[in-house]
Length: 111
Image (cartoon, rainbow, N blue to C red):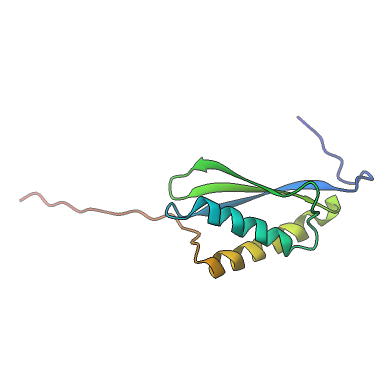
């Protein structure tokens, strides 16, 4: 198992933020929204630049991962919170949907 000493005198750390988008979403628009959210986060460093990956075709959504470098490891949770809030706002502004699991139930009767 890999052990990471987050209290070491390291100036930057990388975090991964999972994000789901509806299947009808434009891949480019989701990527633009996620990168725009990074610009609004005071903890994200511009270099190396944030990146977005489509990691899976999920059961209910397209699953993305936002990878960003932040100024200090101890700001991981603050940065994640700030990014999640900015992502939510960017999705709303752009009309993008974060889907939730749902099922269609068909009831048959034998007659």
